[in-house]
Length: 261
Image (tube, rainbow, N blue to C red):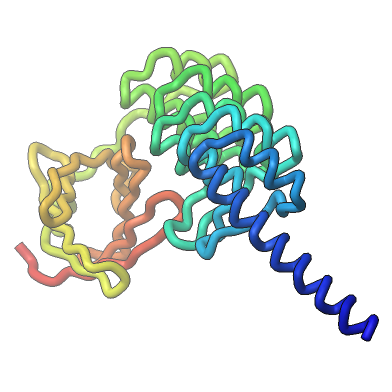
């Protein structure tokens, strides 16, 4: 009988903990600091997760609740969480939503690859955030150079100056690709990986790409086969005049020419 009572108590405690975890997730999302503290006092798990892998800190951060973020960070919550739906890191989501105060708290706590962090942060044009990355991490020379070149292209003078002082090298001179080669790449391309059609064409000595329903993007030649659109950290590398690989933020998609023009 005593054993049955112990089992019943354990089950009740398990349900109570589950309820506390849900309370913590909900209050973190809404920014209710008092409820967050109460849930933790009632035994909620600091790294409790939603079905999409979002923790209390992730939810508070993505919604810009700075006081809750500060409290959870002080408790030791992990910053390096990626959700399972958007596949986005906590910092990337925060930057996309322009919660820059939250980002400034997350950056020093992150153990993510500094090259990726610098690329994401530099894109915002916020010199204070870039400074925070440089103070807490050591990006590679290649990452510094890339971020510097992109800052110059976006005319982000303050960010560019910070990166130059951090040791970034001046960009190499532009690569020239002859018109015949550019025109050989022209055509409509499709991918079996994603439902997007991309039109490639040459104009005024440059290679342009344009996804269906989107504006045309003028690329910069890196070589005779590699081209990039700096503002979006997007690169196109041709395997031949019939196919290319589109790369962006660690992802790669293969495209093949469907209709030559």
